[in-house]
Length: 195
Image 1: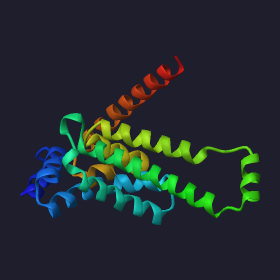
Image 2: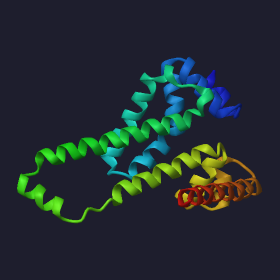
Image 3: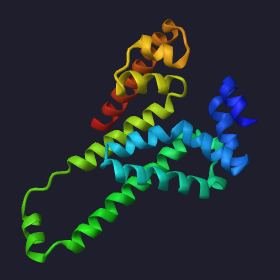
Image 4: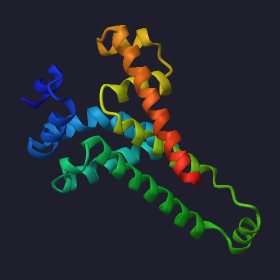
C-alpha cells in the first residue's frame, strides 16, 4: 500500500514517514532505508572508512527504528531526523575510536602525541559534511536528490533527467534555483558568523 503510493509520487516523503511510523515494520523500515540509506552512507563515508561507515548506517537505522515513536513530523522531515541520528552515530564512532586509541597507546607515545601540534582536519571535514547534508535535506525533494546527483556524483543534467524520468529543463531549473538558495543560505550564515 505505502510502496504503491510512494512509487506514484504521492507525497513521497510524507508517505514514507507515515509508513515508517504507522506501517508494518518491514515495509516502513525498508522504505526509509531505500530513501535515506544512501545519504547516510555518503555522510558516513566522508568521516570514516567503508566498513565503519556501513556499521554507522546500520546503527543509524536501528536507532531510528527503535525511537520511531519519538519522531515528530511537525518538528521537521523524516530525512532530517534520520540525518541527526546519523550525526550522533558518527560522533559515537569517533568517541569510541578515541577511547580505544587512548587505551591502546603507551604513556610515552601518548605524551609525544600531546606535545605535537594537533590537527583537527577530520572533525572539520565531518562537520562540513554534516552541514552540507543538512542543507540538502532542508531544500526538499526532488531538489535535494538533483543537487546530490549533480554535485556529489558529478552527473550531467541529461543523466539526472534520465535517471529521475524528468524533463531536462525541469532538472536544470531545480538545480539552478536550489544552488542559488544554498549559496544564499550559506552566505547569510557566514555573514552572521562573522558578525
